[in-house]
Length: 191
Image (cartoon, rainbow, N blue to C red; front, top):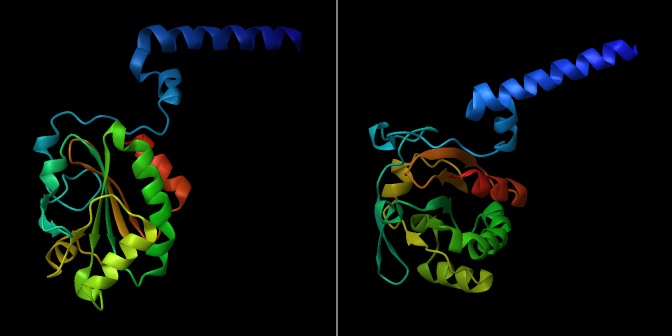
């Protein structure tokens, strides 16, 4: 038994050395230390535009609550949570506090939230202002008053969220409310 353990230890040591010297960045040890981080994509501008993971996120332009134009392309170079929501949506209400928390925590690291309000589903615009005040939201809230962007992004349920990396590539899509843990993990994974 002792002989078996010694041989197994030698084999593991040899595999470790090969992994670190020959395989380098592609080795198992390095991959384990990068677990949970999306791999940077070479030539992201050559990717197709679409709504699937690995596609470039479609461009859009909306006005925010202050009348400022918000273009997705203006945020290139930043990690983005693109969230589609409404004030009447219970899961939207549940996720907003930790969206705000992580926005404050990671904004200095290049993280942004674009929380597109489905304005056509609201009773009034004042409901949106009241919601933002109630939740002390400070991230950007574009208003989708004609349902153009929600329709273009094929939003069928609220909330729906897209995690977009700094190159504009969709890395994950979540239909339904985000858990605090999932939100945190996805932010950390974005290159």
